[in-house]
Image (spheres, rainbow, N blue to C red):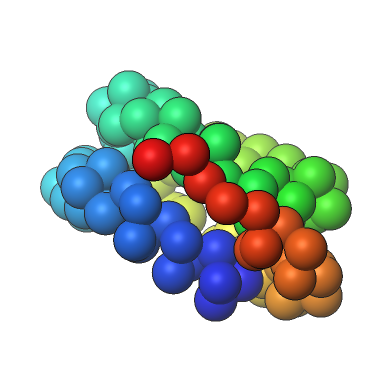
Length: 105
């Protein structure tokens, strides 16, 4: 998970900052209000092989986390167990081969 966060921060810093600021500024409506910014983050990260591998290997856990967020928009903190399961899964993913794939410049 740490590797994925570092890659996201390195290649998608601007998008992550904008999305985070939007979520913080809109605690009860962030799911709808920040949707376009969420899509920008997703688009930015979707081409990186490490993130693709984590998404593939932990798709079920991530879907449970997203569903929880949708169902608890104003109380996202109740999704901590889903976050923990996703993080635990991501930390078990072997990203060594994906991390070696060169990215187009």
